[in-house]
Image (cartoon, rainbow, N blue to C red):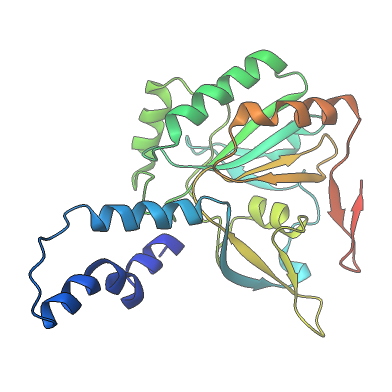
Length: 251
């Protein structure tokens, strides 16, 4: 269950939506129902989550984290196993996507524009569908394939997976572990708790040497990342990777 779904199912949120009407009824005051109340609450909750990072955290030991981005293998949406080493030497956006999200059309448009402006000799987008946010990705991978073909997605799209919780896929484990935004050390342990991504279209920018440079939440438009991408391509900035002592160091 996603963070949004958990919050929506909570007694607290149900009270926010329906509690006022019940209270006024008990006070014998007659008020018209507000048909838009639940919609406003949902949108407010989504805005909070779309700031980028959720509150829930799963704990991982260092030996659960991929040592190298390059050696991670992952099936694409056609079932072909790909090595992420294919994109060594390129700056990469690693992003969790969902075909049926309201952010999808605008993000795809700007992703495609970024690829056209920067070129793919030194840059690529790696997209990872997930159903963890209100099930906004298709359950059937064939439907994801059809969607990508219909809207002509030119960048690699991988099979559906988790990006939060104990089953977080290895790509997102690597990115979260090597980002101060998500990493929370466990006291007297080498383990760390990794924060949840808050919604679809959380974006990690990974440099040519596979150091994690920065995380951008769903509200950040892809074109707003262009300056940082060009700095990484030019070697004017570097990503980071965590060492055995748990310290983030430039690669």
